[in-house]
Length: 144
Image 1: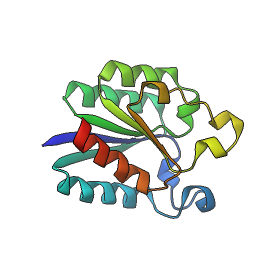
Image 2 (image 1 turned 60 degrees about the vertical axis):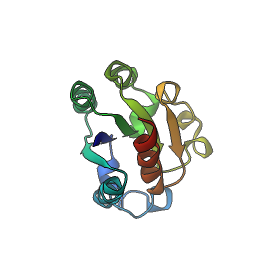
Image 3 (image 1 turned 90 degrees about the vertical axis):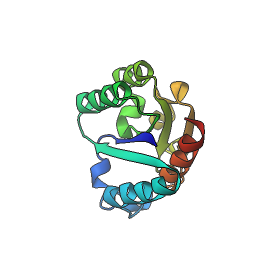
């Protein structure tokens, strides 16, 4: 059974409360439940983690890479645009990674258009709200 990491960065613990017109009304717990439910039909196991701290996210990527996980679903939140360290951790892990964004970052403020992760990700899903996470899982279950 493939193991897939589901990693969410800063402020994503506020989903369902934070700007629902941008990020939707589904909570992070609900997203994790949906992905884990879909994982059983994809013959995958999903380990989910969220942190508002960059170092904790990097540590988790290292852990999953060392444990031989097959892939990573990553929503880095605001770190998408600023964290070279997070990018380097993804590269060093060797994990096939799908970058996920709830909103269409290309239709938002200019500073959100540049992702430091996209160039090293196998795929990018943006603007599909919580459905993007399940799409990323389906892709990784077949490709990782």
